[in-house]
Image (cartoon, rainbow, N blue to C red; front, side, top):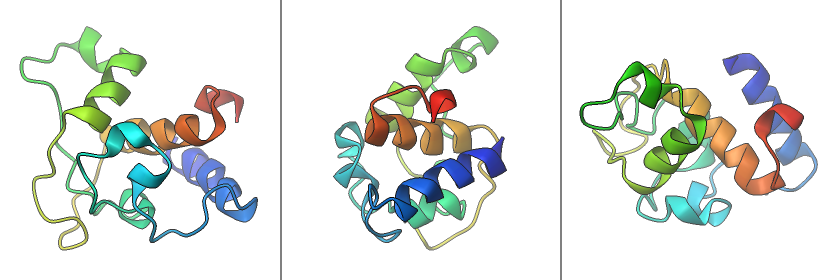
Length: 113
């Protein structure tokens, strides 16, 4: 899924809907404004600091709730390190981050893009 999401996001760059990989995510996803130092490039390179960003007491049902998790990752999650300074594989959160950004830019579900 990471490859497909990456291609979808890079199509937005190609089409000019995302201007630069070094732009803050919040430029395109206003709900992400609490993390002004996280760039689009950080999402793609697993450097956002959100690899282990899960709600406290999250259940499997919580993690499978796309809307709840994209809302959490944008509005409540706090980076574990300064974005760009470390690389930690975003096993689950990559989809919420990149898919959420695609949805914010396109205004439609990521799977339609």
